[in-house]
Amino acid sequence: MWEAIRRWFDPRELRSVGSTPDYRFSLANERTFLAWLRTGLALIAGGLAAAQFLPRLPLAYLREVIAVALLLLGATVAVRAVDHWARTERAIRLGEELPASRFPAVLALVVAAGALLLVAAVLARGLG
Amino acid sequence: MSRDPGLQPERTRLAWRRTLLAVTAILLLELRLAFTGRTFDAVLAGLAVVAWLGVLVVDWRRATGSGPRRVARWSVPLTALATAGLALLGVLHVVRGLR
Image (cartoon, rainbow over all chains, first blue to last red):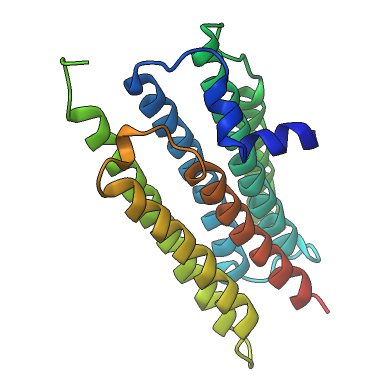
């Protein structure tokens, strides 16, 4: 794990493997990273909004739990985006297949499950 | 190489600019968070501004000169770390508010 983190910050290593690709591929990889980062930023904005704009909910600390969960999810997306960017850059330079990842599917399921839970909470509050 | 000499760097510059705008929105939410309650949380506000300035500098570096034609290196991990840092600042503030 620390090896991977060191690799993110070691540009020489990233530039020494394989051969330099067409810069357009690197730029496309960079834009994909930025799109992921904005996804994380949207989750963080949701967490900050929950912390500031949600009224106190009937369940104790539910508001705080929602806010912290969204913030941590956003941070995870940001960190994972760097890792994916570095591994993709390496694969492009080595001419290997791009790294496969379950992360987008897992993230989609987590967000969908969270949304359904909130729907249930809103309904329970409206009916109860 | 010659098919779109200018478009890809331009698109990358714009992607950085959109990201900077998103980070700016986060900064504003975080500054608002720092002002809620009776006291002003100067540490939260200060660190949030530092993270935002980091992204601003990276964006500026990627937008000027030959930036977008070079492979991004420090720019990418630094921006992600600033983002994760902003998230953790929010977590710390929420957790501290529970006491």
